[in-house]
Image (cartoon, rainbow, N blue to C red; front, side, top):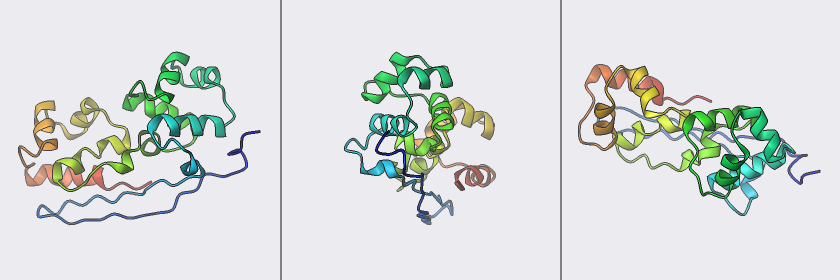
Amino acid sequence: MSRFASLEYRRIRTDKAEDNTLGISLKKETPYSPFMDIEDDSPGGRLRAARTAKQMYLVDLAAATGLCTRTIGLAEANKLKVSPPSLRRLSKVLGVSVAFLGCFEKLPESSLGERIKARLYYGYTKKEFVTLLEISERTLYEWEHDRKIPPEEQRVIIERYLDILM
């Protein structure tokens, strides 16, 4: 039996709400879990801890998610960055959030562009997010790199997606 098996998943809500000149704030819950006492607090370490807590072998997780064992093994060794769609599949099977597996609660939030990158917290790829906002990938790139500021009507839509409620 795994040393994590008897522990249940817990989250302690930590609201981060910062104001900026554009009025967009990001409320983020930082996912705490029994896996936080692991030595390797990286995406790979978190993935391994969540898998072992579920008492799953690599082949079991691969079968449940449709990913290959090599991909999961490389991700656990931090030699492969897992895509947001794959993170969504892994999080669903393992019962943890996408943000936890990707360490996205550690993303900086000092500028509007960094807050827009919080799309990763949801597990959205650039293509998925631009489809939701009905903008071009180039426009999203410019917003995320603080080269342009979204117009007021777009900021309202962005704020809806950045108000993270788990």
